[in-house]
Amino acid sequence: MIKFIPLSLLLLLLLLPSSAAPTLSISQQFKEAPQFYNSPECPSTDHTEDGSTVHVAMTLDAAYIRGSMAAILSVLQHSSCPENIIFHFVTSASSNTFLLHDTIANSFPYLRFNVYPFEDSVVAGLISTSIRAALDCPLNYARSYLADILPTHVRKVVYLDSDLVLVDDIAKLAATPLRDSILAAPEYCNANFTFYFTPTFWSNPSLSSTFDDRKPCYFNTGVMVMDLDRWRDGGYTTKIEEWMELQKRMRIYELGSLPPFLLVFAGKIAPVDHRWNQHGLGGDNFRGLCRDLHPGPVSLLHWSGKSKPWVRLDAERPCPLDALWAPYDLLKPPFSFDS
Image (tube, rainbow, N blue to C red; front, side, top):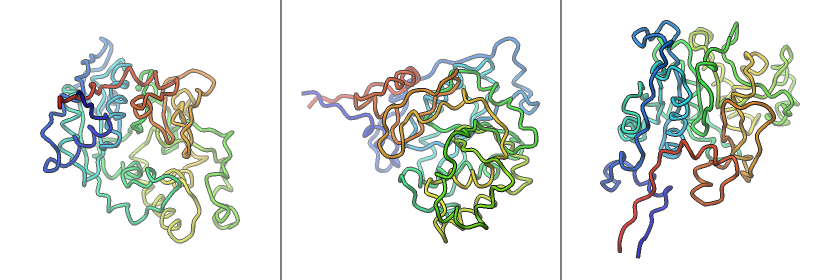
C-alpha cells in the first residue's frame, strides 16, 4: 500500500528545528528555478547603488515559504534585468533561519539576497488581537521596521507579500515617482474607509480629526514602494508604534497591521495604477470565497484574504484564478513510502 504525506504536513516537518525534523533534503522538495539573465540594455551589475538596482523586501517563514518561492520566481521571470534585483528577506529570529536561507539558495543559487532576523519581542507587546489569527503574527508587522532592519544604503525598496505573483516587470513598479511621499501604493477610494476603524475611533473627535486635512483612501500594504531615507528621517516607525500603543488602551481598529499604516499614511501616498495590486483573490477574512479580478489590466495578482492558492490546489478545491499561480509553484510532488 502506498501512503502519501500531505504537502502541508511535509513542509511543516521540513521547517521544524533540525533537532526535531527528520533527515530530509530541502533541495529535493523544491525544484531549482531556471536562471534568468539581463537583457543587453541593462546597466552593469557592478554599479549596485546608482539607481539601477531594484531592492525587494519580503518576509520569510515556514507557513508561507511555498508562496514566497512562487513570488520570487515570478519577479525574476518577468524582469528585463533580473540580475539587477536584490532580495531582502526578513525572518523571525525564533525560526530556523539557516534552513530558510538554504531553501532559497538551493532553488535560486544565482539569486542576490540577504536574510535578516527580526526579533518578535520588538513588536509582540504592541500587537492586539484581530479578526484573524494569521494577522497577529509579529512577522506580519516587520514591514513597519524595514527602515531599521535593512542597511542604510538601501534607500528605496519594493515591499511584497508572499501570496502574490507578478506578470510584469518589477522595475516599472520600482520606478513609481514618490515625489514628496514616503510610500506609494494603489489606492481604493471606493472602499468604505470607515470600516477600518471602530465606532470608538470615529466618535472621538480627537482621534477622527486625524484625517481632517486629508482625503484618506484604503490601500493594501502587501504591495508598496517605500522611501526608506524619508522614513528614517521622519521617524515613521515611531508614529506607527504610537497608534499601536493607543490600540492597546482603547479598541480603535480590528485588522492587524493595516490600520496603523492607514492612520499615518492614508491620503498622503503617491498613487500607483491598480494593475499593480489585483488583491483580494484569497477571499474575505472569514470564508475565503472565490473572487474575480477587478476590471482593467493586470501586472500583479495578490491572494490576500483567508485562502491561499497552494492550499486550495492541494485540497483539490481551487478557485479559477488559482490556475494563474500554479505555473510558479516550485514544490515537487510529495514523497511516497512503501508500507
